Length: 418
Length: 144
Ligand SMILES: Cc1ncc(COP(=O)(O)O)c(C=O)c1O
Image 1 (tube, each protein chain N blue to C red):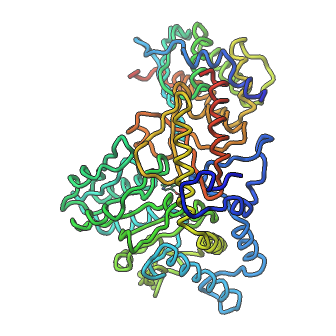
Image 2 (image 1 turned 180 degrees about the vertical axis):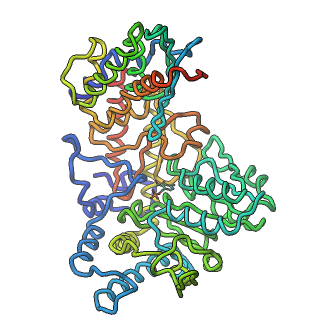
Image 3 (image 1 turned 60 degrees about the vertical axis):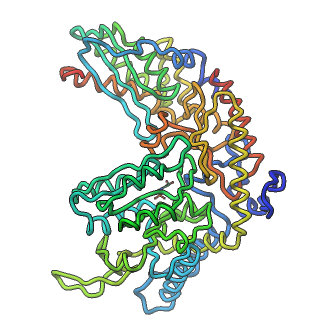
């Protein structure tokens, strides 16, 4: 096992062997080889603490929330609300009332687009989105633009992979209502300077919606420092369960927003022909929520909050930098967006070899990477490639696994005759 | 891994590198596009029909080695065949790559039997075949 000291650039060591021991799945084999899981950007693996918390909840605490007078329901409600408090501390929200539970990043972005966008956008208004957005931070804006007569305009990115801030500044105008950008790219890993973007956008009175799906697992997010208006992330990329995510919104904005979906739990008073609604966050949580998933997310947040994040970030960034260096030496490999500061997510293409073929060969070696357009077709077009091979590294990945990938590419080249 | 060598046989790699009939077809009478939205693979197929006879066929597009070689070898396999024969070959090919057919394929197409060990790649191998079938179905529509 390679420890951080072997990479040797960060002061605080990261005990990767200890972290790996917390993840049961990492001891399994795939096609007779030890699993090398380099696809945490798609979904992260789950530590024992999360798996146990979900089982424990179903075995000893299962009940619906916010509706029973009985003890189990009260316990479940307390547990559910405790996770909201934990999440608000984790992200640095001003209050737990600013945290809405959603089913994931996609749901969070659709909620903001439909509720905030749908109620505020007028014909001629503009929504700025970057060229590196995941389809989930693009299509919801297209849908609401169509409905309201607003226009979606692209913020270009540079060959280096960074957002073109000069072009962004020129695009900003009195018509700009919403700026929707990702905190970190799920394809090239590029980290966007949200503070600067938010300051510029606020100057013209626009609100800033941040897709934090890839930043929450890799950067110490502090919403007070970032000063965006909305931020959303997925539990399953943060070592938690699927089906649960967080949406943060500044309370003054959430308060003005109409409900997204109607149903139980989000109302104040219901008549047959009209209703009044609960204040946020309940206003946006219609129906029975994914309670076990919230419990699991709570366990995940607790688990990652006991980490030394300075050590983690240093470790992951060293790992991805080392991976980039070694990959660049493989004949025919081109890394996309080489110049940007990045989280531990990396995309590359190989001369004469389609990413799917590379992915299939790597899979036979037990190496899990993602091959495809990663739900970022505009970014693929920007770089002139149909697809990429993506390797993404989490808290449990090692330098040995980077080496396995690099030597796996040798096998890719042999099998595919390149 | 044996399955891997059976998947990426030299014939497939050769057709991937130098696809045959890889061009737009002037005077085509049938056309369709095959797309896999999950992975972005995309091919266009043109056919020139003379009554029930497939007089010429060509394709363009991009995709993995499996999808490209399959398209290339399909064009060779159906050129000069009748529409009914091409449809029958589609069914046979589909069965074999999906691992559901024991029957023999025309000699050259046999190399695709290895795909059946990689269920995820069946879509790649059949993408252009589906496009061909679709083109035949709408053969009287205008060709772009
Ligand atoms: C940057 C980014 N945004 C949004 C999403 C969508 O997240 P989810 O599928 O969990 O809703 C993902 C992950 O697929 C992502 O990487």
